[in-house]
Structures are given as C-alpha cells and as structure tokens.
Image 1: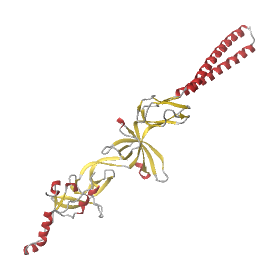
Image 2: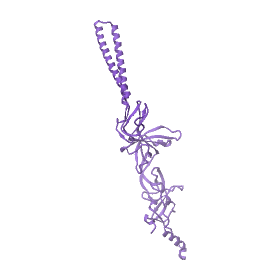
Image 3: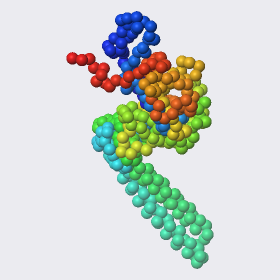
Image 4: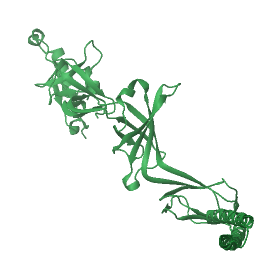
Length: 374
C-alpha cells in the first residue's frame, strides 16, 4: 500500500536557471526558445507498476468473540466458602472454581441415603414374600386372593425404593453442585463472587472462555451477499496486532437482513493457535471471493479528474501522460487493476506529483540532496 507523497520544491539551482532563462543577458537569449525547467522530486513521489495478487470481495468489520463462552451460575443456595481462581487464570476441564457451604445439603443427602437403605430392605422383604406366596399357591396351600395381596405389597415396596433412589440422586446432585467446576478448559475472564457472599440458584459466579477458537461477528451489505458463501476464506487485521494478517472461514450466514441497515450478519470461525487473539478486539477484513495475479498500481497513482483515468509516467527523464483502462479495485490494499495502457516495471508518479505537467524534465533526488547545507 502506497503512502501519501510530496513533491520536492524547486531547488536554488533550478530557480537560478529559470531567472537566467527569463533575464537572458543578451539579444541571443531573447531569440531562443525557453529552456524547460527541470523539476526535482524525491523517490517517495514515485511508484512502479507491478504484478501483485489482487483480491476482491465484500469488506467487513466486527468484533472478535470467543466461540465458547460460559457464564457459570450457582445451582444451589448457600454461602461461598472459598474461591480458587482469579480473572486471567488458565484452568483445566473439571477444575474447582469455588466452594459453596454444603452443611445443610449434606444433611439432606444423609437423610436420603438412610431412606434408600430402609426402602431397599422393605423391597427385599416384599420380594421374598412374593416368592414364597407363589410357591404356596402352586402347592395349593393358600388361595389366589392372598397372592394378589402379596403382589400389591411387593409393588408398593418397589415404588418406594424407586422414590428413595430419586431422592438420593437429587441430594447427590445438589451436594456435587456445591463444588463449582469448570465445564471445559479455558481462561477465567470474570469473577463475580467473593468468599462470604450469599448466592441463590441462578446467581452468576464466573465467566469462562475457551480461547482456542475465536469468532468474528460482522456484517456485509445485502447487495454483496452473492459473493459470500459458507466456507469462504476471510483475511483480516486486528486492532493491537499492526502489520499482521489473520485468516478464518465463514461458518454461518444469517438468513435475514437487518431491516434498518440492510446488512446481513455473518460469522467467521478463526483458529486461535497460541491463544494470540483476545475477545473484544475490533477486526477489519474482507471475504476473499476472488484472488488472482494481475498488474496493479496504487490508487494515488491514478488521476481520475479527466473523462478517462490516466497516469503520469516517467520515461527517458520526462513526464508522460498515459490513459489507462482500469479493472477491479482492491479496497483493502487501495490498488487498481490496470488492463491496458502501461506495463509492469513502468515508473509512475503518485499523489501531489500528478500535478506536474506532461513533458516536464524530472530529476530524482536522494534524501541527502534535500537537507539544508550547514
């Protein structure tokens, strides 16, 4: 990408030459044609037409978010006894984040466990009674009616056993919930509670993010939606990482456009090797719908003021205006594709230097030439 450039002003030598041409010093000077003034420019006012990779596609911008973000909430009421991790801590899956007072819940658990033992004994006795009654009926020792009563007793005992098991499972779940665990490996991004806080079911405790995969949430104009497809590559830059380019792929495209902005939201999945990217940063890039090698020039080298785009080429030490045919425009790199008019390797003037008249002699100065003499 070319930078804005400046044209170096006439030097004292050039000004003196102009005065000599104007004043002459004799009749001979007045009869000759004026000598063209040589303009001095710095190398920063020039560029070279070159073959580069030109990419086209919708420009997008948005914010990076972690693809997996979990807000850990309390599942049981109680007082927070201990907090094990602070924001920024890296944790493994299943790591303990905090401990909630479990004394009351532990009493419920012990009660449910005792109830299960009693129910299990009652179910075992009922099962033995049923087995004995079936044998007696088969031998004709008791009536069928008595067997039905035993069967109802066995069914009741088994129902009570199932209820006791459910009560114990519920108590076990609540007891386990007093130990707050990480759902997956990641980083603690926020800690809401402190030891001694009283929490209720649903109270937020921590926010845990998995930085292994990030997601860019952005939007493109509806008229450019045809250039976007799931799986398309997206190249972008991120605030805080100057000079670096990252790449992801479109994972989802919203099926409806925003009624106010006529923009369509899309989501880009970004592998985050080394956890370099951070959620919340601003990103700007483009969907690479087309990419090819072609002759390109910086936007600052193209003069759009006339009916036809043109460039100012430096050839044999003089400026030359050349009309060109432009193709695609790379908005991100700020370059135009040139399909006719110039060739690779041509030297062109850029920025303010485009104001120099055609057929003007030019002299390229080095940076040391422009420094004032001591």
